[in-house]
Length: 194
Image 1 (cartoon, rainbow, N blue to C red):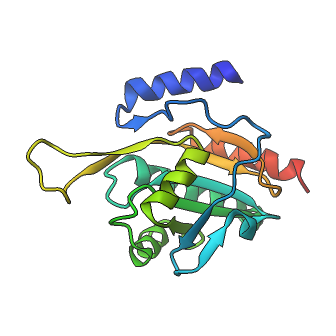
Image 2 (cartoon, rainbow, N blue to C red; image 1 turned 180 degrees about the horizontal axis):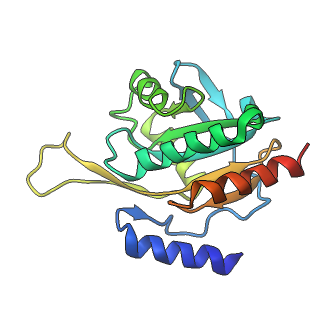
């Protein structure tokens, strides 16, 4: 399994230079991911505790992302569809790494274009940084020389995390894992925890 993850990370670095690896080892499977406090795209305050009892499928990104984020959210939506009724046990979450531009209203509109079940989360830059650090997700603004301050992209880690109903990390899925494989791995986890 570790060799499989290492090979996938190397493949990502070579094939998708904008999809950075976290730069640090992701949390270990079975580790309880630290708590978080953010706002959902309805403007409600949410914490990890709000989703206890359900699986959480989490990805980090931003609305203006030209490639990685829309691909990841399309894959997330395809997995939810493929899971059928079992998808009710999964709360899909999209945590923005660009809280200065990604407002709750924009997150709601954006995530709904993929699947209305995907909940967009945001917060202050400090809160978002804390959540990303908890998952060992790295991100940074990238500006072209001479570009205005508001014109930038965000270089960020890619992939998805699956948390169990107890908040423990069950799996980290690399970017561009085929939807059939992703669906099978998530379905296996759902079956393992009735």
